[in-house]
Amino acid sequence: MAAQAASRGGADFILALNAEKLRCLGIPSIFASADLARQQDFVLNFALSEILPLANGPIFFGSGVIDPRSSIDAELERIADAGFGTIVNFPTGIFLDGRFWAFIEYAGPGLPARTRHA
Image (cartoon, rainbow, N blue to C red; front, side, top):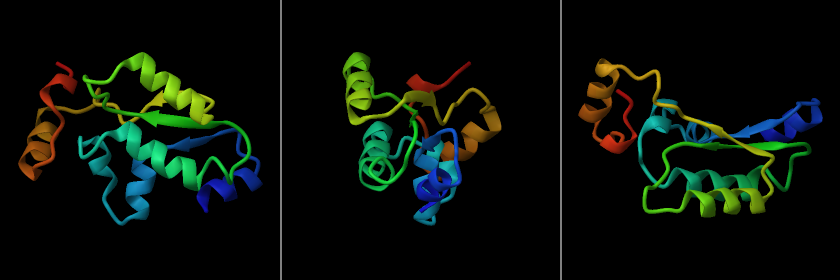
């Protein structure tokens, strides 16, 4: 509904982010930073059914944690082939400090060590 409203309202672009879907499901957006599932698949699955067919204009793909077992070139091709206008880095871990990391790790589903920034 938000993507349709943004399209009708003349938005320049729409962001397809895992945080927006999590909020719609009643899950705090802080969990967008957690590696709960393959984020690319999560965003792609809901955007293909809920955003791309209903919205006009460019749709930006919010790409977070990349699975190191996946080829970045294959991921980029898959996202582009789906019809997204560009890819943005979301969520980014760049602003996460030691206290935040400790909270996420205490909560359980933290980010893998490979994604952390010093």
